[in-house]
Length: 399
Image 1 (cartoon, rainbow, N blue to C red):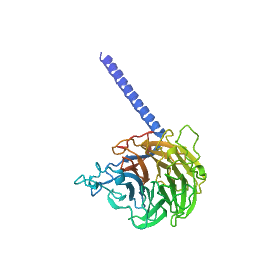
Image 2 (image 1 turned 60 degrees about the vertical axis):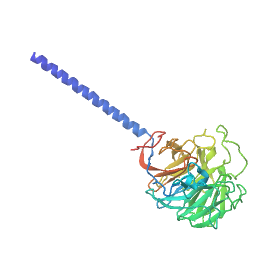
Image 3 (image 1 turned 120 degrees about the vertical axis):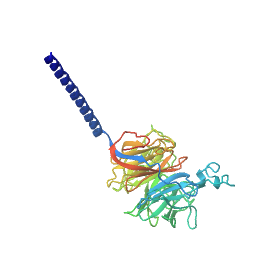
Image 4 (image 1 turned 180 degrees about the horizontal axis):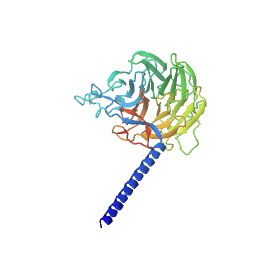
């Protein structure tokens, strides 16, 4: 009897050990599967929205449609927005209405705002002044390596760019209001969307723009036109192409607006052909290299709004703002393959309404501005490389 009980206990113990071993093997298999999946997952930069950046504006100021963002060598963030013209006098800026319809709130902020890395407002200026023509509809902002700030304009008749010191002292104007003569004019522009300044060659690349259909390269000091081109490096043609058709053959000219022209460290120029839903890549002399389409079925406003690059020396990743589908795409810059995207339409932090412009700082953080009713500046903190889903949605709680 005792021997039988002993045998029973041995068998029970052996069965328990077998179960434990099986569980351990199962856990190991699951862990191995998870590791294999992680190893095979797409690796890309990850970001998390900072809902407390920037800090609130003083003086009851509010932003209008924010149409440009740039980061200088000090990691100070400059934005340009459109004030009263895009703010409702009755509901948003009661103090600015005539007569004032509110006692305490609110007023449109100055067109140019400068924030330090902590999100403090440290500078503000802009608007008409002596010696220059402020654009009727300011658009795009670029802080160059010399501490200067460039601004374009996309209203009808805005045929110029203006250049200031970072604290708003006027330096130079290139082109003249109302003097644009089309996409082969060598003295004026046609509703400039954005400027990129190449410090090595002292050249400015002009995304020209909302009226014209070209990229223009000028001397950054004198404004002298040096070269220009249209889609595929062709001579620009202002013929009306009609509405974009995703089923048609690729258009041989840009559609308006040509919304950005961003130069990478390796000398490749990435151009936002916004309504055609494509990025075109060129050598600095205008020689066509390649193109890719993004969300090709997007109509109307288009999908390719603005471009920035990752801060690693090779600039391995390209960040693309899409204000129609309300996303920031992350592409492999070499292959132009989309790796992932973040963002969604909405009003909460990390969501977008008309995400218009994008820039990066020295730490790899991303800054975006929103036009139309978005009227906002947001910061997305770089969280390092890691496995990512194809669409990350609103970037909260990234680990």
